[in-house]
Length: 285
Image (cartoon, rainbow, N blue to C red; front, top):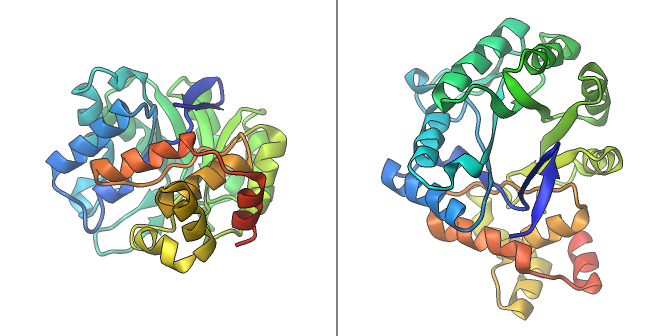
């Protein structure tokens, strides 16, 4: 397994996104645990989650609890960097709402600590800007958590370049990750990726295959990815992740998965070497 760095931690170049195992269409717990264990068996040492990855209003943190259970029951569980997030909420009616207030973020972190069963969260990220709260106040709460030792590293999610620079300033140069949407269908985060590359901050693409539904149709939607996949005898999804890895050494994709076979295929992207011509064609697709 190739590795990359988030702050001072070396992690697998492909992480596991936990969201599909806890929201609409989620599998039963047994299959989810098998999926997480398959990821660990394949060498994954980064798992992304959030307190908002749940379905019903009374099960906040469902995904965090699931991941904690899976790690506790696997011999390599202690080797995994768990990245979680706070500031997003799901009231249980299908909506996603926001609360970036410092009080909420600090309480959310305490609750995540309890569910994950750790003394300090490996990577804690402010989930999404809240227009009702000054961004500096929200990130300031994350800084406080870092200073208090409640979290080991700090990141942000769904941020623009101005917010990245501001967050890094507020955190005293300690911003280690930016988690933004990025995929063949969603490339508007290219400026953020370039800025992270410039600053040496890890860039974690969420929904790198286009989302739960679109991931299956990636090859039919993007012919160049299908062509490269056919030439190598692999899936278009594997090609997509290999393309992202080739874009910059700070990129660490976190494809969501709810089946062992899909995360195994994703991990294999680290062994797929694209030619310069193939990369250029995919980058222009």
